[in-house]
Structure formats: C-alpha cells, structure tokens
Length: 427
Image (cartoon, rainbow, N blue to C red; front, side):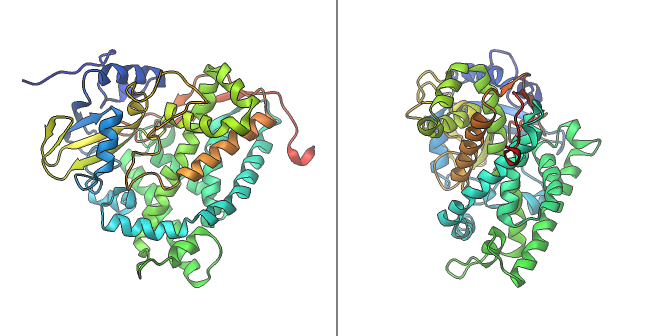
C-alpha cells in the first residue's frame, strides 16, 4: 500500500507551480508535509532530459543532518546539484568537488583549502568594504533602485572576481554567464535561447576565461587566488588544469549566490519585520552575527542538494534501496519545530541557531561560509549607516525555476527606496 502525501495547497514539490510563489507560501506547504513524514516520495518529469525520476524529499532537520554526516552511505558523486542525473557533457563544466566523493573530493578540497587560507580571507575584508562602498556610491543619489541590480548581484561577484584576479573588463561576461546558470529557466534571462544550450554555453564561457587566466598565472604568478590555486600543492597533489574551470563555476555561482539572494531576501524580510530591523539597526555591533545567520536560516538561499544511497539503507525506521535519490531541502529543515523554537518567527537574536543554510554537517559544508557571513554583515552595516531609511517598495520577483525545482531560490528584482544622499567621495 502506497501512502499519499498532500501539501496544504495541493501542489507537489517537484513542479514549478510549487516554487513560483512567495517564500511564506512555500514554507507553509513544507510545514504541512513535514508533519506527515520525514520523507516525501515524488516522481518528477524532466522537460529537458525527457525522463521521470523518483526522489525522496528530506524535510526534517534530524534526517537531513544524518544523511549529510554519512557520505559513505549517501554519496554526492552520482548527482548533487540536480534531481536528475546530469548528462556527460554537463559534468565537464558542473562537476566540481561539490559533486564528488572521497578520495577525489577530499584531495580537491584540501588543495583548494590550502589556497583559501584564513590569512588570505582576512586580507579580503578591506576589499569587501571598498567594493560595497563603491556600489552604494553608485546608487545613493537615486532614491529608488532595483537592489538586485544595484548591489545584491554585483557585490559578491565583484569580490570573487577581484579575489581570483579576473579583470573588471570581464565582469560583465562573468555576471551574464552566472545569471544564466542561476536562472536558466527564466525567459528574462534566456532571451529566447534553449535552456540546456544556454547552460552549456555559460559553462564554456566561464571555463575558457579562467583557463586562460590560469595559464598566464602559471607563467607569471601574482598574489591572487588563481595563482594560489594553480600553484597549491598538498602531498604532491595539485589541481589539474581541467579541474580549475568547474571550481571557478562553483565559486562564481554557488559562491556568490548565498550572499546575493540573502542580501535581497534579507531586505525583504526586514521590511516585513520592522521591529527586528530596529533591534539590528540600533545595535549592529552585537546583533550582526546572529542576524546574518537568521537571514540564512529564514531565507535558505540554496534550496537543495541531492544525495544518492550507495547501498540499501535504513533511516528513521524507513528502508530504501541502493540508488534511491534523496533531495535535502534546507529551507524546510530550517523551519523544523523539533529544532527551532517558533521557527516561522524571524528573530535577529536567535540563539541557538543550528541552521543548515550553508549545508548540513559533513565534508560538503560550504567552504565559503565565513566569507559569505562577512559579506552579508558588511552589506547591511553599510546600508544601515549610509541609507538608514532604505526599505522595499515592492514584493521580490523570483527567478523562474530552471527545471521544476530551483537549485537556488534566486531573486531577480527587488525595488527599494531611500532618502538620497551624496557618495562618500563627494561628502
């Protein structure tokens, strides 16, 4: 006998209709489903690959963290960023270590981690401050802007480009390609192109850019991250030339989108919770760290990662076959009342806050979580100081999901208004 699970709205998780709604509507459905089961089975039809895939939505915190902690039983290498298995031609560009298992995963992560040192990240802080100030300078006299275009999208990507040594002249190329990868199902982004073809083209563009830069850095090293990556060596192991492209795509897309989406959604959420905004704005020194983590918990920019059972497994007294696909829905786990007191309440001073917005515990926890937290803290602190009355004047417009379920719950537009002020250079 097969159990049927129904969301309060009647919509199923694997459909674009489920995701083409507000955050609160989606989370209300997850809340209803979460009380029915830890695992919601569903078949999803692929409009791109032409097949049907059975998967299990993991929507409770305990089961999601258990799966994350056991990569030997729940692997990433058979697909981590897609519910369906990716075709071979896509793995050339989107097969970074986020989609690997040990020993290959640990080797690449160790090499990358040796370049991504705390000292190097510490030197980024001044650069992050300057980039944020520069972008606010460009918008502060206007009084009304699309926050996504003015700040949320360019800010983290400029940080990454500067960190990698990508020249500013190539920033538009990187922004366009990353937008395609993040929102390949959205007509506004596609501009008439085929979704899968546009994805491959964007991947090829970013790979070609960083491959050319890496070749130059091998001959003429500098102090940027690209140089550090191509020369980094751990136990005699280095990144192969073909491994650098997928890593840069990971950095340019996943590495910037937590900050990008959390900045936009954070502003929207603060607009809906003015009491919490006042608490944060009145005491940024003591509240920023917890407020940033609460935005990541509440908004959960990264929607899911996939894990695949490597053998027959039992979890929470349920048995699953080898090859079963588990979709870890981080936003649903981040609202689990078994873990979070009053989880639907946005609380900038929430403590404790064991959210999984940067991924569950285990080897695939976000390598850039520290940088993302710093970027978000700097962005909101500067906005509060320089544009103290900034507020949303419209609902966020979300990217249309690429293939049913979005990997990232991206915001493509958020209009805000504020009292115009002079750029710092003119003060």
